[in-house]
Amino acid sequence: MPINWTHYPELNTSSMLDFSQHVLLVFVDALPAAIPFQSILENRLKRSQRTLQDIAGKPLTLELVEGALVSIIQLKNSQSAFEQQALLRQAVKPLLEERPSRLAIAVHGQGKIDQIARQAAYVTAVNAQPLPALKRDVRQTALTEIGVFGVARLAWVAEVEAAIAGNTLCRTLTLTPPNQQTPLLYRQRLQALATEQGWQHTEWDFKQLKAMGAGAFAAVAQGSEPQDAAIVKLSYRHPQARKTIALVGKGICFDTGGHNLKSAKYMQGMHQDMNGSAVAVGVLQAVRAQQLPVNVDCWLAIAQNHIGPLAYKQNDVVTALNGMTIEIVHTDAEGRMVLADTLTLASREKPDVILDYATLTGSMQTALGTRMSGIVANSQALTGQMIAAGTASGERVVAFPYAGDYDSELDSDIADIKQCTMESDADHIIAARFLGKFIEGDMPWCHVDLSAYAHKDGLGAVSSEVNGFGVVLTLRWLQDLLAAE
Image 1: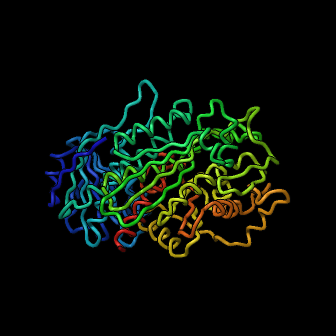
Image 2: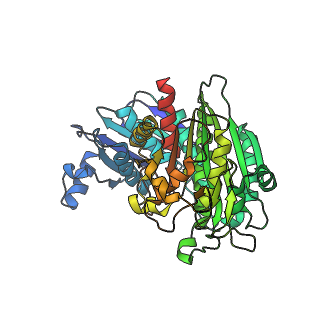
Image 3: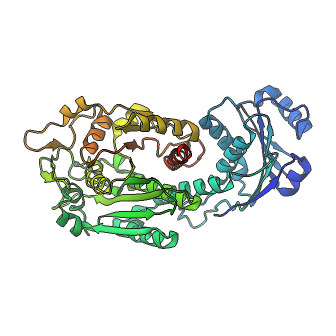
């Protein structure tokens, strides 16, 4: 949903209320001598036996006589991006709950005022975007205009709009019900997106992949009827690009676990096992929206992991696209199988960097919970870049080692490599070691295990449980990479 932005350099109370009856008022560091709505604020604090100092770190709402609703929050320049985003999300929530068409954001203070105004604008607008809702009586927020008060300029609007578009597309794809997003329907949706956005579009369907020798992907896909799985490549090109980035996404549209069938508790929500592919598409959307001078190839491994007469099973041995034989140990480790052949295809085109995204292992969620995601990279430089991007973007990542001695866990008596182990110990590291075997050539690669793709109470900037984690992280990494050039 597009937002119209209006700019007011001065912080004027009357102008704010003329613009909207819904106001987000952000103080940065020290409170000013003359606070907007000061008498009302002091009475509100007195009623609850609080002082002005108590508004630091906790939003406070005021209902004015004129009928306006004002939400006040005090931030610190010293706070991390994640902390600022979380507080802004809490502060804007009561305003958005009233579904305003216009909303005023006012920022007052010293230091990184422009940066905090940008954060407030992103948090407000991203949480106002409509998401899939099939209830007959659902009412979506109808925010169409935001006025920003108290900052000199709005140089960041295009960047914020691109991030919102990418994050919203990621969440929308992830939240689509599985009967409305089978592999075939997903492929058709991506084809339509490619036409709309001007992306190059290529597909390798199940028959083609099997004929090519992509046995790891085919092993997972063969159990589904119809056999509508495919690897889809979407490409964005820029005439001034000096680098090509490959984004690889796990797109399992529904994961039953196969013969190692999940229980009902763990099968719930498994239509979201394609979130890695949604992150990659969301990044592509944001890159295109900003017209960033970089080439991006988006490789999506789209399939379902079903149970049936043709489904792969434990102790099968299959041959991957790179010729490596794989002993199947657990059919619910399907993500690394479809990614293996997809990484081989992507690496054969020799991109400058490969990033892959996947809701891959339960052990990463055990290690970190759902507040952060984990990364494993074959390059210390890339590891440092991703951690820095996570800190700056508010989408925090933790690095785990890419240590060769873990390979012994994947030794097989009958094949070149085991798919996994029967234990879950360090499976997030073992899975990354497995994936690394299928990258051809010497290029930096980072695996993002999306343990934070969904967090019950919202995360950082985003209030919905499925939060689009990874889109803004990658955008920030890309912007830093281009700036370094």
